[in-house]
Amino acid sequence: MPPVDACVYSLVGIHSDMISQPIPTRERIISAAAKLFYKEGIRSVSVDAVAEEAGVTKRTLYYHFASKDDLIGAYLEARDQPNLSLFKRWYAETTGEPADKVQGIFRNLARAARHPKWKGCGFLRTSAELVNMPGHPAMKVGIEHKKRVEAWLRVTFEAAGIKTEAPQLARQILLLLDGSFAVVLLHRDPTYMEAAGEAAGSLIRAATANA
Image 1 (tube, rainbow, N blue to C red):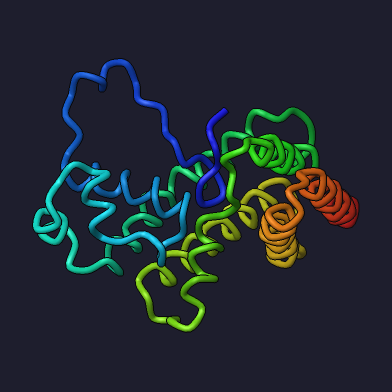
Image 2: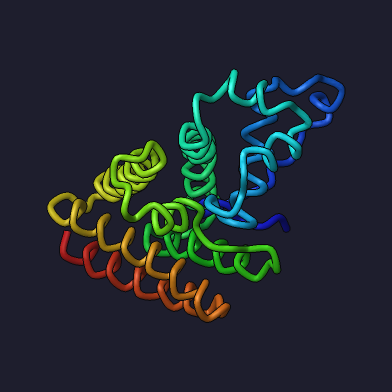
């Protein structure tokens, strides 16, 4: 199983019908940056290193990105929809009630966290490195990504009949998700993520009973 990047996959499989097709230069640069940023952190990776990994000149890199900051923002932006889509797929593929389905997300994340190359949530790790730069492009991307995850949870709970408590419940589940990323990265013990999933399930079941 591939490692998880920015909360989910950092390595995306290439479809067989795409193997022979050249990857656009901009996408190749973003892919190279994602690999290095996730592995080593954004501050320790130079533009030269990204250009070398992508097989382009630094001049070509700066043709596509005005600065390293723009590249960092693009790296996270490229993970936004794939990450949310994976959460949705895990939810849909898990049988049972909403509580069971949300627990399925946590179980899949715990399984991914057992991969030796797993390094936590790329969005949270990047925000930690840029904590003193709230206006950084990547910080804005990270904020919007987390808002989208929370909004999807809220809509999902509302569709399941949880009306009044849906906004607060969505926020609580997001906190459990992000908290589990931090604690598992610290302890290297994915059972913390499974425990967070159990807590999420309990919250959802209680809200369902009150709906």
